[in-house]
Each structure stands twice: as structure tokens, then as C-alpha cells.
Length: 249
Image (cartoon, rainbow, N blue to C red; front, top):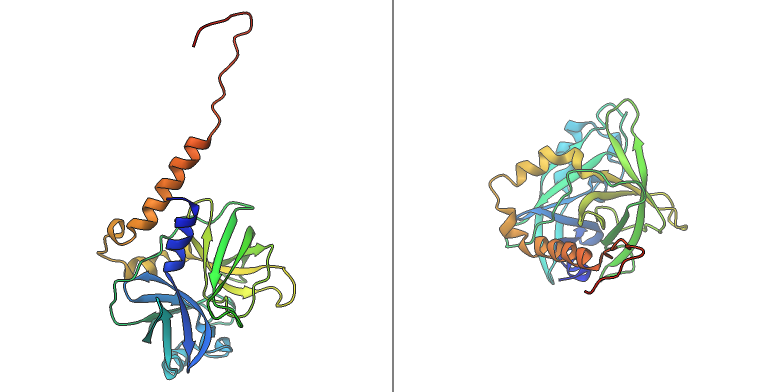
């Protein structure tokens, strides 16, 4: 396996999200039958609602996913919304559920990217029914007001509508580091921001309780191991010169 296999396994975990019969954005599998995406795919102006109001309104929408050439009806399972006091705008995550299928599960990093790490994103923006990809670089974090929360900031490409909910693959670690939530421009390649998955570790771990990830994500793990072995093989071994001596080899 090579880098292409890693990208293949990454894409296998990604689904198209439909709301009320129309394509709304992207999501990805974090557990069997559990897809992570954004609340604003359902309710764009979510921040004007209290937590309780949102808890009721979020179930009013008809949601489905398209994955592996099939359509699955979905329902809201849970959500994360740290905007109850209007102080932490844009930190929101939605978890939706479909009937159990044997879907692959994304591998998630236990740390944020390093400065200038290259990342890869695949999603379902407008006018690209079969999906589209972008390459971005991590440039730092964006602290949220009156909160310990923060967003990941990226540049170097145009993040179009529909990429919201797309997973962000850190090419250095070979694992997911975040989820796209904001575009900085819909006309220029200014990048965007993402939810850091390390801040959702407790929630994601809850969905994965009792799972054997070594088995479920075996192909992804094999792709990582293969890439690591390939990198070691390609490393140049420098042998110090011994000036004034000669030897047979």
C-alpha cells in the first residue's frame, strides 16, 4: 500500500448529507452507523436558538446520507453546541445515525497539526455531485471568546459551500485532525477553519466504546504502516568518509 491507499481509505469513510431532499454538505463515519457533521447543514442560523430550543427544532428535518452508491435514512443522535451564552460562535457539531451497516471508521489523531502541516479534504461542494478535493495547510488556531475552545485555521485553497462537515486528513500523521466548518471566502483561496477533533475526544470515544478499531480500520492501519515502511526505505543513509584510508566492500 502507498499514499493512494491512505487516501482511498479516507474517502471510504465520507458520506454526502442530504437535508429535506437536497444536498447540504458532507459528513464522515466515526463509529458503526454514526456520522459526524455540522448543525448548520440543518439550521443555518442555529446560533439564535438556546440549547433547549435547538434540541427540539433539530429533529424537524428529514435527513439522509449517500454512501457507497446507496441512500440511507438518518436521524439526529446527538449534538455539541457551546453557544448557549452567544460567546463561542461556530463551535457546533452534529452526530446523525443510520441503521447499522458494516461501514469503515476514520482514524482520529490525538493531537492538533504542527504549523504548516499539509492536509487533505474531500467533500461534496455545490456542482460536484461525485465530490471534490482540496489541499490546505495548517497555520495555527483561532481562540474563541470567553472560552477555552478554539478552531483550527487553514489556508492555500478555496473552500466552497458543501465542504462543511468534511473531515480534514493530516498528511503528516495520516489521521483526521478536524472537520471543516467555515470558509474564509467563497471566491478566493483564503482557506477556512475547522473543529479540532481532540476537543471532541470524550464524545467520540463514547460512540466507539467496546469497538475493536484494529479490526474495523485494518486497511487504514495497513496503509499507514506501508507508508511508514516506504518512507524508511527511501531515506538516504549517509556513511561518513574516512579520508586517507581505503577498504574493500
